[in-house]
Image (cartoon, rainbow, N blue to C red; front, side, top):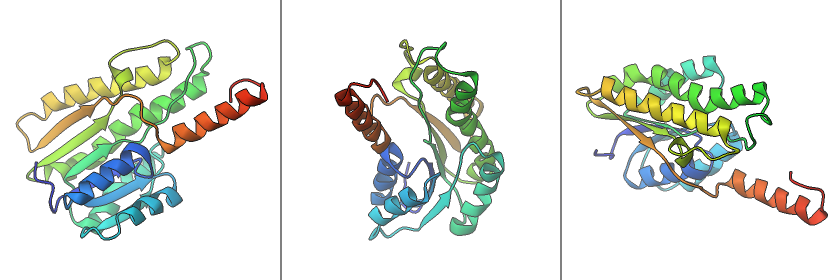
Length: 210
């Protein structure tokens, strides 16, 4: 796929994989609509792209907010005029056995990791169909391929992303919209590093996990 002069929407663009995707696409001349729940993180990512000869827009977005997701395509099209790629990257994680994760927390995680992927795909699909060459990229996980203990909620959500993406790719076969599903392993994002530092601090104090 030729990325030069295309427009990509990236959720979770404030750090980690989302920021890395943004930097990679910028090097290839792809215009970017960056979305994240954290405005300071978005600004930091945008600053890292200074000097790239592309258009960059920043959109504060809570992917669990149905109304905000529904409004995002128009905001992006108003800034860029088109959408060619959608990276459903935003996600959250919880560790713990099924018995340890409350129903509220389980539903919260599933709504972000899977529900938001469905909502964003539905919202942007009409615009992607208008492109001559478009792609949806959904971020699953290694835990969308295997299911270790202590990851019941997270693994279930990532298997759901995998199944949705695979079915969608068959349904869109022959159209201008392709579908990819990605299964990264462990990535030391800023949030992961901060949690690890907190955990080590508590362990040194002898008062258990954070």
